Length: 271
Image (cartoon, rainbow, N blue to C red; front, side):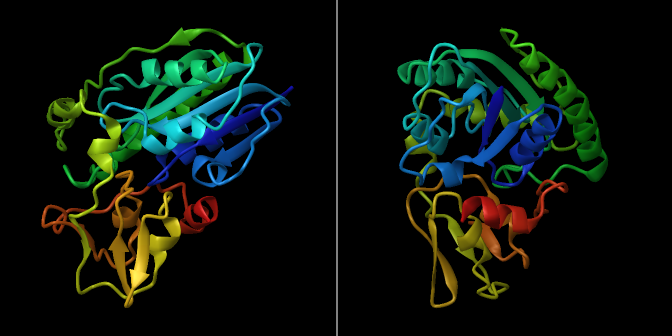
């Protein structure tokens, strides 16, 4: 039977996980949500298993993912699963996904958590390379388990709290993010007023090309941000000259993007 996995990614973590899962299953199509949301119609009738590999933002479903699901139509016979990439707590993401999918006549049967290096440079620095390698090792093992469970169409939802509180202070990050849990997602992410490009900007327009919601426009050889930001951090984390900042908070912080993903991948999945 045919399978399809939809993914949304800003710095490559979810794309890396989606690719790995697809590589351990048969007859799998991968589709970028940033691309798919632009299509008038997506026919899901040929697919037996339907997966979503997405990050958690503010312990919630990213707005673009919600809008994408609203375009889909499922049927009761399809096995639908979600894989959430995160560094802190998953919050309400599974209950939200269940609700959105149910509204489109589907049932979310399984939810998995894959802990990955954090990318939210607004709040913290990139994790040390040695810590990143530990996360990648966990990911490689977890993908084997997920692909087996999905092939068997098992029903389960993981519930785990990130225990790691090392040099980058993940538990502190969680504490910050929980303050926003009760606010609508749209009010948390759409404003882009603090993004800017400093004098290192070379006007290459890479940020415009990889923004998944077309929120960046190049004006007078400088990026300009509109008001539909997802806070995916793609623009900051992939900037080749590290010119993009969020106020003054990111100026001395190191970039992170998944080492398995190339910038050419990011351009192709968003164009």
